[in-house]
Image (tube, rainbow, N blue to C red; front, side):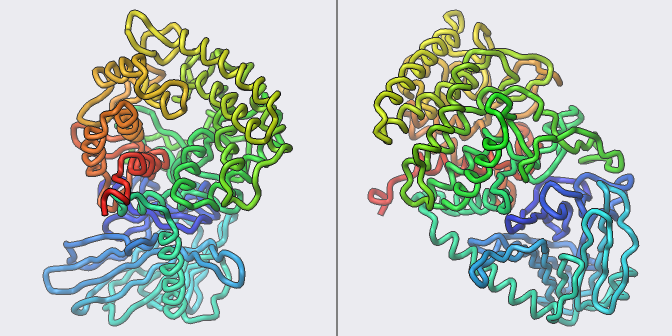
Length: 596
């Protein structure tokens, strides 16, 4: 079957997996989301024979299928049927719930396979890989389990299905429900089916209660709930990190070489993620992320801050190629690691200050910001002052050149602006005045250098002529208002050059890999917000509706979309895109008071 990112996500903030519309596990890493992909059929291992790196439940002579999330949960149900009335339901999830005063979120995937009609004949294809695409070691076969004792992460598949049918891939009649539990290579004393059902009930209850606590907008609640759950699944709770996506090397466009590993924590993207969840009332994710960045800042000199770190806080993310994986639709290379960690991206200081500033304003958070934290943030502010207006790789991580990027300079301004506000809140008038002065100086220089009289627009780089979509964020960051004539001119210029069928390209100029072919999905939501800020709320709602219609079958988005075909490309699910759903819905939804 041709690879696609028309996938569903399951997870528990410890591990995650992608499930195809046919109920196949095609991507899952152990022992954590940036680990070895045990299931990696998405990237075609072993020459792309379709039989490796997959966990599939095949209904013989099957044809029809449907897939949906169990309402308000991270549990996926896939129903397979044939022309003879035989129906099978596959329920996939990762356990997550509170137990004995702690969050139970083991390294575990659970599959419950049940007959819903007829006497279905099924075949189980369990073919994990190891070491990024190589065949897994031969399992040790027990009475009710298979143990895969790979050097990196030993794990076990425990089941009450026929071991002979499982090992030899023999078809068998599914007379009753069976369970498969993938977890640590340890004995499970309970019966697999009973354990799977109890874990399912507890996990369903957890997610329903989590959703119930969200402060939702009136409109588009189903889309916002799915986006919020997906963002939660894209976090690694042990450290507090937020992943940019759960995959590596799904190309941004066919045969372009734009294949990157996104299973890491970009400080810029993560700020927008925790901000969106915090606005919905999911504050624990923000607290975890603030713990993560506090550990990074405490161990790293401010001048050496990287734009991206490993999800455990690792600084070294050396980039290499996984030779045993052919790639998505055989469009390699498959990269492990990301050389962006070596880049200079000056917006990082603003991203950290913006994230941490919420500690000084949100009374719901367990540990509020104080003078000691403010002093630490001031050190980042000093770096922002020094970096403002200096060349960097920019928000799009250009590898072949450095420019003075408008967005980076604006984020440096934002660091100073927020420090001034925090100082005022802490009753430190001298410090507030100092940071206001610095912010004003950066704003004056930035708005002057980023404005092009020839283009009658702000431009992407100081003294340049090109546009990029980050210019739409200027009102959101606060350096200009949405009604500023300069921003309105910029908005019109972006519409003329970057907008195609409601989708926005990040830029249209050549970079290290040529001219981008497809639209960058999250930019469409920036455009929606920019329209709202410019007083064009009706247009914003219409475009938002049409962009939402481009989500995949279960409401998720990849990094890029082909405007012509609507096909999704790039790593998946991209957290920046799911943030866009939440931020736009919150901005343009009808107020509850008016709608009821």
